[in-house]
Image 1 (spheres, rainbow, N blue to C red):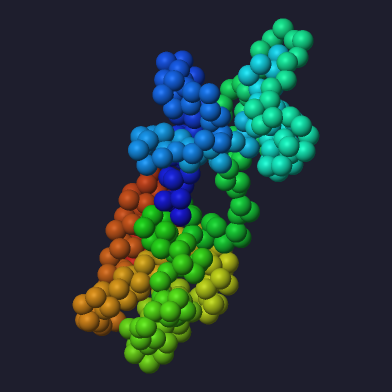
Image 2 (image 1 turned 180 degrees about the horizontal axis):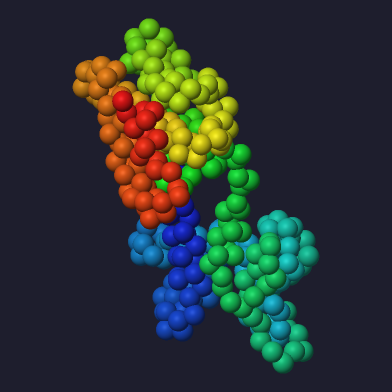
Length: 320
């Protein structure tokens, strides 16, 4: 989840810092050393070119739809290759035979009786053209925000443990490399679950159907006298409001994510070491993790005497 965000941010930043540079010296150097009389949008980079130049060329396809030519005198605007119509370059609209069909050369420019020069402006689909580049608007245009899933707050809730929430998010989107997925990709590996050795490993089996794993989750829900659904997506919806008590709700959410994280970690340890721990050891690790997370939260609530202590709820229900 986070790695694509970093890549997207770097991509937008590179466009802003390099492709749309306003540094006259750098722009002049690019024209003199690389372009000459050639068109930046159509020339091909070579392996002997510098890394930054090849990177610029690679980003042309990303940036070009946003660059619009505001035609003035027509001296610098390229008739076929610049987007002066608002619908994209003419050469892309009519095809490579367009210049031959119309009778205008590929490097044609049109001279207009106008006092101001041609200018190039930045336009996204959602905003009006502007001479000022906006990183936020460009990022939104390149990577539109998807609709928020209904179980979003069951994963990214206040006081979550980041690494636990991340693994839970990956599990929710079924992106863990469980054995059923690996086998569907053609890998010749055993299908059996590493923790119970009795059924094929899948997301549903690993976190809800496996006798070993299911016992861990049932320990916490049983102590709180709760009865969650036995399917992952329904369980995530249920976690939005599992209890009327706020402390119990927080603990159950933390317990679920700690459970998912611990089971996946235990599965991987078993895969790489061949050693499977007993139920009590795994449960104790989860309890210690949750207890460590609740301690600073409880210290904050101590500043508000009217608020019930989350640690008191923890010890009364889950740590006996």
